[in-house]
Image (cartoon, rainbow, N blue to C red; front, top):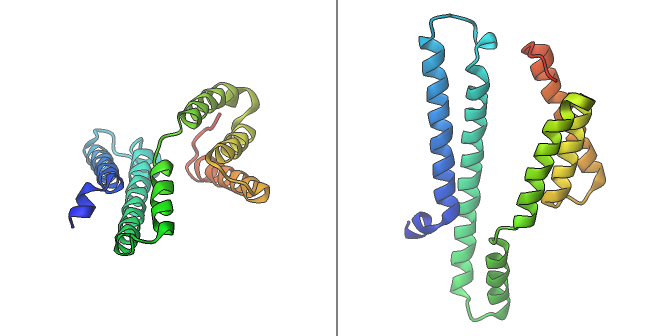
Length: 169
């Protein structure tokens, strides 16, 4: 139990869960107490509610992943005399460091996406943005990069443009 509290990924997952829960409560309260009653599909609080749901799912996933890491770390400490386990622990600490180059690249990429989306339209800009973002994150397979970026952009376009009648740039 003490390992759970000390783990930074557990703390982050609890924080992200709290943010998602707060955003969900905000959306629900404001939708039901607004003066102008509208169906959910036309409500300005639908999108924050969707973001809240996805945020809560991400926090649960992060919590589960952190719990698995704790279980792996505890089994490694049992057989600490093995040199391979020491090498694994050194690699894990190096993995936890923030790569500021990638953070800077994602910020620049997001600004470029924001600038070029009105110029080249939503679909091509989003496909390029997601593909380049996946490359920055470390994806290697070009087929999966292409499929994920195209399919996710088309799903987003279909949901918001067709189903929700939201005008996209």
